[in-house]
Amino acid sequence: MPVVIQIPTPLRRFTGGRRTVTVEAHTVGAALDELTGIFPDVRAGLQRPDGSLRSDARLFVGAEDIRGLGGLDTPVSDGDVIAIIPPVAGA
Amino acid sequence: MAGCGALGSASATLLVRAGVGYVRIIDRDFVETSNLQRQTLYDEDDVASGMPKAAIAAQKLQRANTSVRVEPRVADLTASSAEALLRDVDVIVDAIDNFEARFLVNDVAVKHSIPWVYGAVIATYGLTMTIRPGETACLRCLLPEAPAPGSVDTCATAGILGPVVECIAALQVTEALKLLLGRTDELCGGLAQFDVWDRELSVVDVPRQSDCPTCVQARYDYLRAESTAETVSLCGREAIQISVPRTQPLVLTELAARIRGFAPVQESPFMVRFCVDGREINVFADGRAIIKGTTDEALARKLYAEYVGT
Image (tube, rainbow over the protein chains, first blue to last red):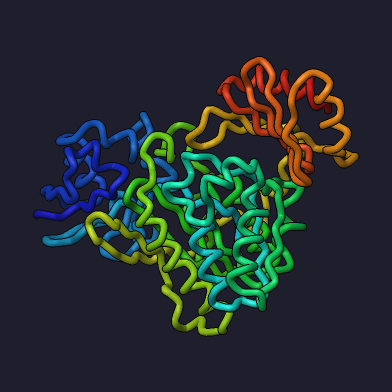
């Protein structure tokens, strides 16, 4: 089922400037796999070399942090929006 | 104000003009030409003066509203300085340019139950979150640890568009004013992200983490860090900052007199500036030095040892 992944500004250079990417997936983890399959360079901003989620990468389904749901196994359904919030340090 | 660069210029201006009774401006740095595109409190005369940002900001803001007490603190937020600099205020507004110091602010804020407003910007994008210790998620609920060096964009690699600074500062100050007014039920209640280029604003919920080392376990890892000499490469600049814990204060007039024997010296009550071997060495009263013209930490430490001493 199609879900929309919102790409934050700092990662858009890895997605050809795309603000959103729509993928077919049943879980957040599967959606990320689809995303990194299309845009492999975005992987470094989200995952460690072993494929686990970087501790500083925050993912939300709707407005809810996936850590309070089921992590990467969090189910997603048709039309859900996955938001990625990157760490930002500048001032 | 923790930091007075881009976000700090905008937020401090809004706070002082709003009539907040007392504003402490903490910043470790001086003004450079490359700052002027987004750090709106400063101008080219300030670059030439070599004065620290905190002193310039306080002087200018005091003229904007003489009924507010504005206190400049030319200092670096470190494990040994952070509590003394921050623990006696009502609200901390974050305008810091690095994660280490932000985690220190989080430690002090949680330990002393001080609300604070996180804010950060990069390129056209920014984030802000209001943190009320014990009530909301803290910074380590959001980010368990600082990102690895080199793993995120910096102002050097991605730049910062001036308008996004004003937008994020406006959101931060609005939250700070609500905190000061006790209107806590009207706070944002989440992490707001905004892209000024695309006009996209959204808010997500950040839950408290039951295993948070800071706000649940009361473990203040960043405050407990050993006090040792630290070298930090400064964001967006070919410069190294060296912080050396000192048991005795550095007497700038004595240092200036020593250096004047072999090199021209620019001196103010806040700092001494001189050049050796093509590098510009800026020494502050708290013993810190910013050495410009190198990214080599070993060389920077050597120059510090040779000309300032430890």
